[in-house]
Length: 204
Image 1 (tube, rainbow, N blue to C red):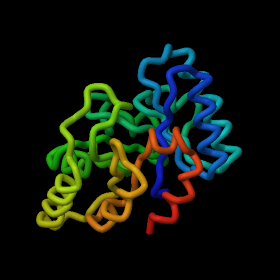
Image 2: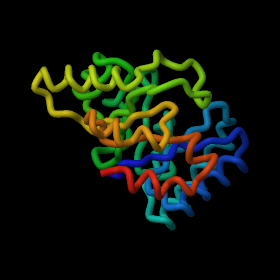
Image 3: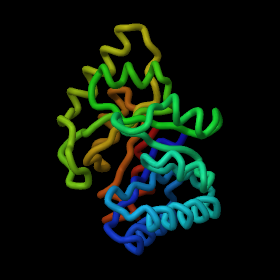
Image 4: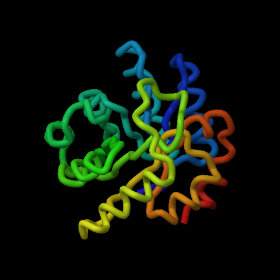
């Protein structure tokens, strides 16, 4: 599983598509399409275009929240928030071969996600980020450390956890030292897509 995810950004379909193309051109291999306030029809068109682009670039295409849409366009999977459809129902809709990721903010969320089970966990936020409305409590490096330690103490295998929320290049080494698998990055890649290669170099 790729260690770097790009979460798409943009307030119009044109912006979203431009940012997605830039990320793919610069070597991103895992794309999560996220456009919270989009009209459903526009979002569907963006997802369709993005799926085709990802196929051309041999990149993984994940849809945020919209399970039925992911099924319709045959995306590689979905990412689900804690208040979205359950992992179990999404698995039933999409089948066992699709990727299902789940959001977590606390140790109990992580344990819930391990039990459900999802294929990876997006744990955050690391720090304040303007890209997400209704931000959950900020974890910081200490928060990640505590959660990983608690999971280990329970003799549970550490799942594939991606740090999310304001992640920048300098965070990668300390996060991986803590035991975090990868990172889901939005703003840093949108503003300077050429950093994708730098992120990849940092990721062991």
